[in-house]
Image (cartoon, rainbow, N blue to C red):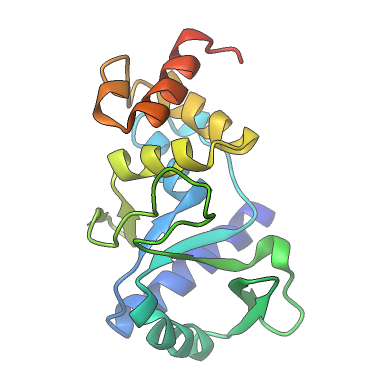
Length: 181
């Protein structure tokens, strides 16, 4: 049931953005699930939230489009997000990631632009190269798990570290060298 609610929230949010012609891309765990499912649906992990990438200038239009779809814009602790109605929780919210900006000042790379995405059957998803870059940049435990999932299904391999900033390439190489963590 929870998985269905997440999928419904993702599809409702992206449909509202498509209708309003707001540039966006699905990022985070749902983007990983999208890519991994292309190879092995049984290897997909689900996430409780929806992460969407927007350019800063498009955020007002995104807020308007998502509010029409029943989402409530909130801003807390420096984070913009949308709860699914007045009773919605941060844990299962739609979170905003700002394109071309660092999520944290200490990050090696900024988030990609929405142009680094492709249209899928239901929504736009960030490109695999940009998704891997994002996961390598944040490199939290869940990001390393997502990267291992991407490696496990063969979407990326030992040729990939060379295409990233040296620090990100070292991070990816460490996952390739120690797949079990």
